Image 1: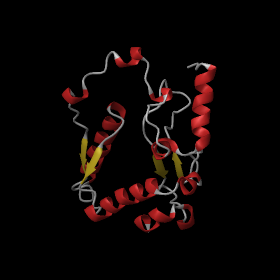
Image 2: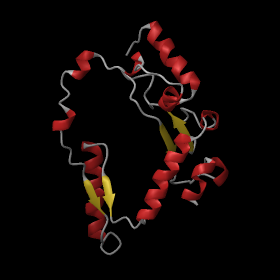
Image 3: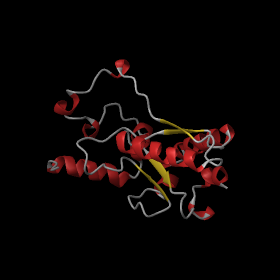
Length: 173
């Protein structure tokens, strides 16, 4: 993929702010920047989103500890879902709903922080346990997506408490 020089410099300028799309909103951007506009040829085959229905694969962990055959079937379903969809939803995982809600609240708190605090975590180094960025594929995709992401790698080696954003610490520990 080859971008025009002006587009590459625009993408780099956006990246250098380390503020993500929330940063654009915070400064009052009223027009969608060009880097977020997909070329018309990419949009031709996209169906009307209101008419699209997705059935994301559901992986049920019920009984995984009781029967090795169940575990093998679950692994097969996870593999198939990942290879086919690239995502899946897990149910009966044993995590309390309150913990899941607190995790979502922690992400909201992180994103609502002052940009200067979030910049400390802005990185494209995915070997770090905790990173924040806008579009993991920002420099290789035809257009950016309107999203910011905080990554926290938990396994196999969880991050140290001091590596986590303060607003997310008690979610994890």
